[in-house]
Length: 245
Image 1 (cartoon, rainbow, N blue to C red):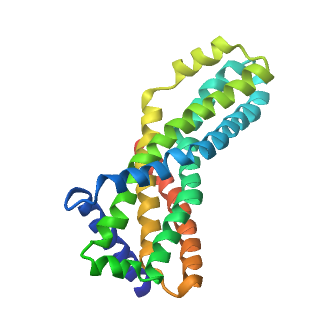
Image 2 (image 1 turned 90 degrees about the vertical axis):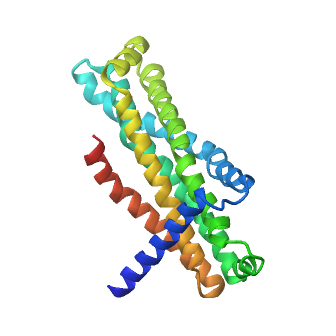
């Protein structure tokens, strides 16, 4: 238990210092832009493909039940609510964990075991402000952007399955979706995305920053980072849903 509290305390301090250097003694803007581009724009194809098929699966699974009650036109609302509230934020965040979070940990961990972080300190460069703060910024800003893409992609995936494959009326699909969904449903998902992005960046940078044990330690830190981030996303999703909705 003492080890757990020690790890949590050390992670909290590192994250708080990272947030502090977001506003004071910031690194050059190009470092922030570079991390945001890597996290957000380069992850778009993965998120689009995942979300399109997720929306399609929702339409596929709900069509049979709604068809029994002649309520196929409600599929649009179900897809929009599912993507906006839950699947959009969670799926996009898990894709970021798999693609970007693991890379963050491996990158910083490699810098640690090759003593590049020590070299930064010798040159008078604050390693937290240089390595942690830009990645925190990228997670907090980039993940909500990806969630917007995921929501739109998922809705169009559901529309394609419902309208093109099952001949659901396209006009009713969109009208019922607009009638039964509210902006709060989508904004709630964006609130989650901000928190998930913060979790991903904080956990990934922590495991990378305190990597030990050579190249084997980098692999172990990367695995722990992905598992911990994924678990925290799914656990916090429950509590955020209870609070927001």
